[in-house]
Amino acid sequence: MNERIDGHTLLIGLMAYPIRHSMSPTMHNNAFAKLGLNYAYLAFEITSEKLPAAIDAIRTLDMRGSNISMPNKQTVIPLLDKLDPAAEMVGAVNTVVNNNGILTGYTTDGTGFMKSLADENLNIIGEKMTLSGAGGAGTAIAIQAALDGVKEISIFNQHDKLWSNAQRNVNVINEKTQCKATLYDFEDPDIFKSEIADSMIYCDSTGVGMKPLEDMALVSDPSWFRPDMIVFDTVYAPRTTELMRVAKTAGVKHIFNGLGMMLEQGAEAFKLWTGEDMPVEYIREQLFS
Ligand code: NAD
Image 1: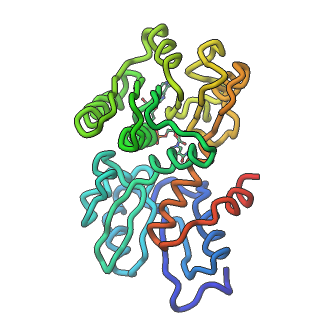
Image 2: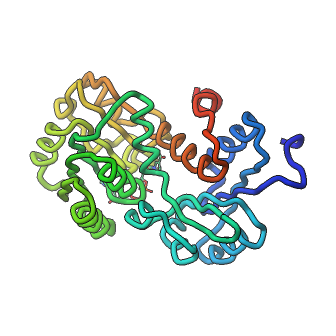
């Protein structure tokens, strides 16, 4: 790192709170070093109160940009100059690019999800997906999948504060894309089971399976899954979730945690800042093997 930093090094940030656990600084700095790019990526603990000053600092310090994570993904929007159309539809930003003081917001979580499937030679375009959750991850996944041409999405959410977000996602998808989206709650297990049975992919974006719910899965009966389907959990810590264990018992061939999505959302942001392709396989080996 010391050998790389000089008077021309461009700074990229990560603005969130809490953030010290993030793998993004290691991921991006390893990729810059591998490609010999003169950038440095640093994590900053930025609460909602500090966000306006932090975004202004991107302009003042002529930073190349920043990743944005919780709790700032929505509140950052009015502080930016422009919004990519997908970020506008998702209503959240996880990447900011600074072009001569003009800050544009993007979302790369959804493209990261789709790219992580493409990396495994899996194509869900024209297929049906059942998706649990409509928070940050679930919204990005649903909207990008719909934009990319997934035919039908059945979204399940519990009646909590994210229910209205789930309603909004379904409306946006039905109004602005060719995809047919339907919202259900989890109350009737027969509907949940039959929607999964009818889908090529089941994706859980709820975080159930992560601490403190690491022994839980929204689907606990292996007979709900078919061996030829895809089961995707956005959780990446732990690496194997209870849902993934249930899918394994069912003999499901394509079972994924959220690491591939994490890597590809980072690669997408990396490309936006540097114009270069992240050396994804190298980073996958460095970080995840
Ligand atoms: P969020 O709080 O914005 O949304 C959580 C969603 O899960 C909501 O729809 C909520 O209604 C639902 N939910 C919560 N508890 C539930 C329960 N007990 N039963 C049923 N539904 C429940 O969270 P988020 O930012 O979308 O993150 C969700 C998960 O996705 C986390 O595990 C996070 O680490 C992961 N994630 C992964 C990536 C990646 O790149 N792999 C990116 C973003 C988030």
